Amino acid sequence: MASERPPGARPVSSVQAPECPGWLIPVRDCENHFDRGILFAVLSLVRDVGALAAIAADDAGATIETAKRVEQTMPTLFAERAEDLMRRIGVGPYEHADDPPIWPRAMGLRIDWKRAAEDAKGARSKKGGVRER
Image (cartoon, rainbow, N blue to C red):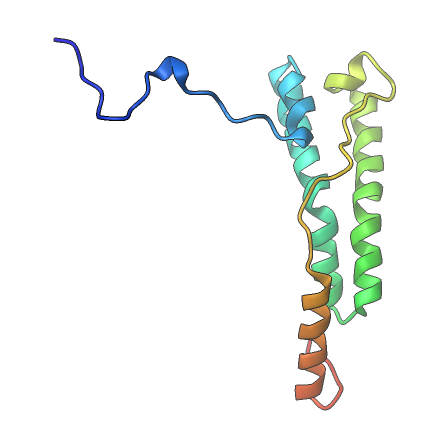
């Protein structure tokens, strides 16, 4: 008995997979499954470490300017360390090239700095100018 499709359903052969996000292309193109896992973990961490570190800096009482600088600096510092480790053990792209293009420019979590500044200002005004920790 042939199965009938619901009205408007397309055959499976016509469904297209979503396009791979730019920051995941090195992972997609890596042939070794172990290396692929390492690349995914490293790129995921590099993608988000700036925003996470900035949140931690803000929570610790840093100024918005300091938290912004932390957000900008941490991905580079983390990527440099990860790159050194991957090069030493020959992970994926580093097995065949000394400086493979695996670091996309625009990636990661983004912080709404205007809102963060407003939230910090509001928190200070409620506590008489002192930020609550």
